[in-house]
Image 1 (cartoon, one colour):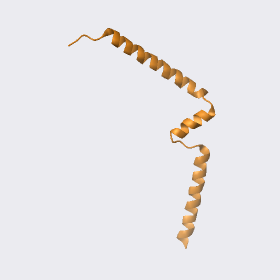
Image 2 (cartoon, helix red, strand yellow):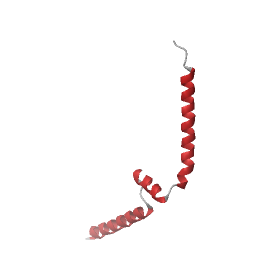
Image 3 (cartoon, rainbow, N blue to C red):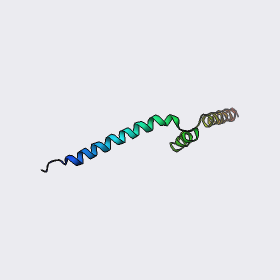
Length: 73
């Protein structure tokens, strides 16, 4: 079995540390993003806005009400 490559493991460790630092830096800056960017990210994740949720709730309540009216007939 060959001895581990010290230069390779050092380079890998350095890469992992750099990536960790970049991730931490990115997480800190996430709150500084413009609102449009945050909305775009939310959209890409499949999230809805409060306005869309409220509109959907209203439509559902209207459908439920109409269904109750039909059931009475």
